[in-house]
Image (cartoon, rainbow, N blue to C red; front, side, top):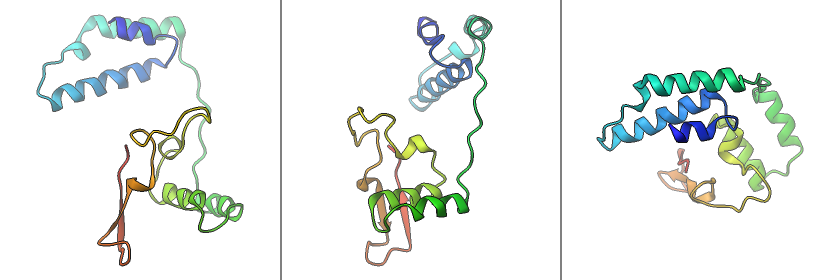
Amino acid sequence: MSWCSSLAGQVQPKTIKQYITHVRSMHTDMDLPFTACESPLVQRLIRGIKRYHGEKNRKPKQPITLPVLHDILQRLTAGTTEYAACCLAYAGLLRCGEFTAQKTSTAFDPAVHLSRNSIQFRPSLENATHIVLTLP
């Protein structure tokens, strides 16, 4: 309850519900009990947060279509990391936050950010037929 309350005003009520769902999923994976999601008290708390803080209308995000990707790639040098990252993001249907750091002041952390080690060429680099991308 106090954790949910501390999130009020910082994130959307829908996001709080998602966080609770993720915590429940982790408990299920570890075969631990977790009943907070079904608790009427938690549901009332989230409803109260929604009423008090409201929900902000989000500006819809435009999809990266093939013509948009071509426009981006024309401004980049082929063979660079940025060029490869854009192609990978498009082909892997990645969200921007899944292959970029949020702030320039944020230190790179391979446990959180994609790196070259996140990609495996199969069956081999020289004879690759596909790749495996592991999101941290």
